[in-house]
Image (cartoon, rainbow, N blue to C red; front, side, top):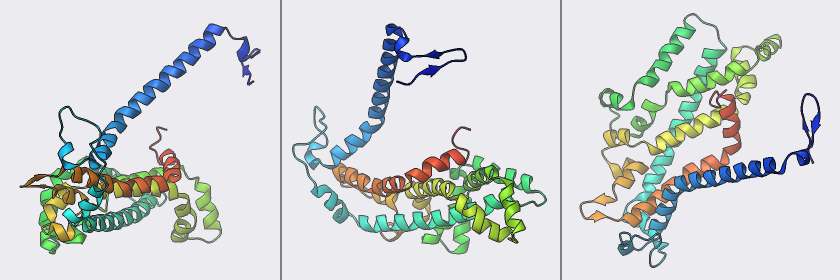
Length: 296
């Protein structure tokens, strides 16, 4: 039995009053119950979505409403791919999100290193101005960004979906916050060994920044994957260059909405982000702590 040590004496937990031990157990039990209720509250929409995706079309809206239908229709998932070119939407979404994430992470790591480890005139002023762009909502930038893409001839192209949002101040901020926690002695040791700024970056700093890069990669991928407003504005040929959000919108037509297919497609659209979170779970926990998002 673990003993509790105070400044004056050692206290055995068995020596504590029984009422004190019982009240502690009650508090723990109440806490677990509350956590389970909150978790159920957040998970219940996902449970309803999965259940609806397996219902026949006639059982989606019933009175009184039921969680499960009269039968389990696994064919809804296959029908979602035949009802619309949903496989094309998935491939487009993966390509756009992966390319945008790669560019965003690369630019953020380079700019974060420049803002944190390199000394140049006006560094802090430029960084503050760079962070100020976070206060500009995306809705305000849609029209000028569309005019710019039109001038480049990029309307209805993949580069228009990727490039405009691949350079964000959030990524530079996260990486900079991490690099500021790295001791300066590592740079000094690399300099003594004859390494310049570029070699120090690739050989010393970049391997250390992998957890933070994982956090930024997840944020960027989810942002691209769920983006709806900008693809809606810039894409004309939805069947060829539409992403997942635009593809889900196509299920709502003039002939009505196939809600069971919509839910099936929504479940499928969640899988890439869930897989990404599972694969990078360890790096995410470490990266959140070391990048300034852990409340330190």
